[in-house]
Length: 450
Image 1 (tube, one colour):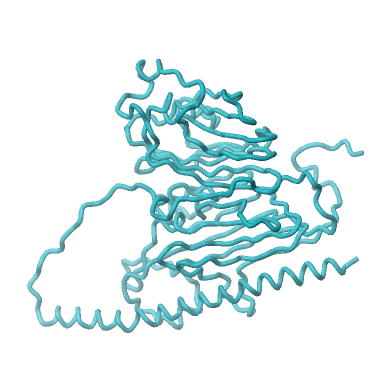
Image 2 (cartoon, one colour):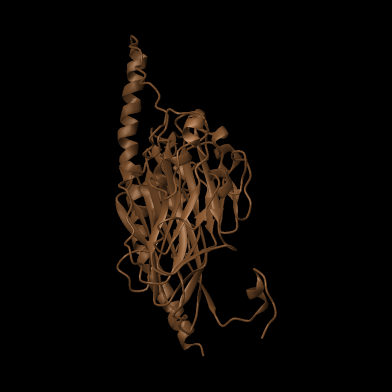
């Protein structure tokens, strides 16, 4: 019996396993190593036969709307990098980010022979991109990395990673559902291990679910936070609390990310976290304030640590904050059910926009089917700019001619560019099937290798 202990003790033991990978690599051997995820479709990134365990997921993506005809040939550039990093001011291209595509696409993961997913969340929020607004941060289970020039932009491209282990006995199916009117490009690596022996019967399966209340049902949103009138109201049973997770079964909660857009202009916290384990009427775990649950104090700071931190600080945005807390060494365990809640303001007096992704492990089957809001109710609340009406200017003959030529060039360019989108979408559909076949061949090879 080994006396070794610690988070990385597995690295000191030999394990009978075979590595595998699902990725967006170009099966033709060329360099178009991304998939164009079609608008309004679900694409299977791959299916893996068990027993096995996903050990790491890496992805990067971009969604741009073509606003004008480029002066680059649309067929020749189709073989080049999918995002031309040329500033529109140079007059070469004019593409614009879809700012909210991270909320319009979903990630869906189904384990074994279930007919309901165990992971269902907006693509961005699953990877801790709240409100479709990426922020650089590094924790143990999740990382987001974006270039400095992309910071502070809705829909900015970045890379994302997830290191939560995701075991499965029979099968893992990973899908991306694009509920946008635009396609988007996706690079991905999904690394996994294959085993020859079935997993133990008490194996807990990874789950993730997204929720939102916009606005939360506050009884006194115009009363200042921390005022004596608010602080004198009792809330012992958590009535009206924001619910991060409500599930049935046996397992353990391992954390969440939380996005809050505050409307009052004061402080959105002061709400206590309350955990109801196995059907409790009163919570057995009571916190002392929202920032305290995220291991901060006196408000939220600009830091990101392995288990907790700030991803996007409210002082750096147009009024919202994104935080995370992971219970990797202190999971909250349950045998029958678990309800994880936080007050939105003390005794739930604030009416802010809250959204969150909860992460937990539990035995199968997933007893309560996961649901998600329709796409129009997932979009962030952002300040609206007033409509601007361009002035009417008398046109010279040269101006008229320039407008006509520009319009004709657009009419010629757009269908050719759209055709390239369709070609790449068909490639994604084709390589989805190839990924499934590739994973099956790898499993069959490992099965024979005794």
